[in-house]
Image (tube, rainbow over all chains, first blue to last red):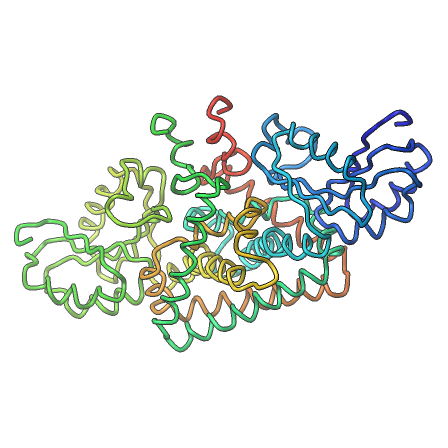
Length: 248
Length: 248
């Protein structure tokens, strides 16, 4: 590492401070130090005190990956057409930022920058809340006595299985995300629960108009995601195309 | 319809009683009458009073379909390797049930029978709750002021977009499901909310061990769904395989 121009720290978010302390003596002046953690304010607070003078620390987060983890889960196109977000600190050298951006662009990523707090709030709604909700609903189903586990599995194609992909993600990573982006996650959970209580009330009181309105406005978002090239425009995630290759 | 041996009612659940009353005079003795509704106790309550003597009414529910609706959303393999559940009434003629089962088997379905209440409870957890939760989280994201809608769309690949597929389903159908399977849905929502409150508490108090345990046990369910042939064994629903056909 002594001669490295670029050092990418890819460790559980909770270990980033300890790792920064360990590697600090080996970082050469002018090197770029970055990370790939899912939370940014916490990583910055942990790592910054250990970054030697003259080293460019630029926190980063490539939004890519599947529910599988570890080196074997990688593939050549992993970062293609995916976003990589930087949360540069005040006074960051523009040349270093451009060099790091070019690295990620050559991996296929699109680049965005924002401040760490906005990153953590954005990721709380687009990533952290969805994973927590998915883990929760799969847990609720797992605990039922009235419906057996084998029935949940047999009939999962009716909706449930879409949640199981997220709920199969790495538990260590998601524990750390919850511990290190606590405030933003609690804020999103509170909003979600308020909305759900309102929906539950509409169901209890048989308010069909309200239910219809709520179920209508969400369709436009999916269309926008498909138009933005962040989703495939085939029904059911193209599962039929996979199961019946002749159709695709 | 006067000469039909088999009549399949495929209308919004809330209209099944009115439709049964309309068609009753045209049903010939010995005909099989069935439906494809997502709830069963309510459909039975609505239709049974109108079924003429000598007509075999066998409530059914093929668990198939995508987030798209209408005739154009159909395709030849729609029912292949999917379950079709019957909830026969007491005294149902076994020969009629076998004839109807054979019809669905020839469409590619696997057949199951259970009582209507158990059907409604099972579907509440495997289908109705997932859809309601998906609608709710997409609505919560849509209402945020701190994160713009275009950011939610841009970064949706981090988890959020998996929910948007279910939340793009037909609002009329899902309004009716909520109105006609109210008790089972409220029961599942109460369990889900209790579990979520417990998870939220673990996040607030930084209980990493509890979070890790909760996030670990849900992985096994996905493996079982894949082993049961109800899901494809490729990461990310095989989205990469679709976007990069050379890889598949």
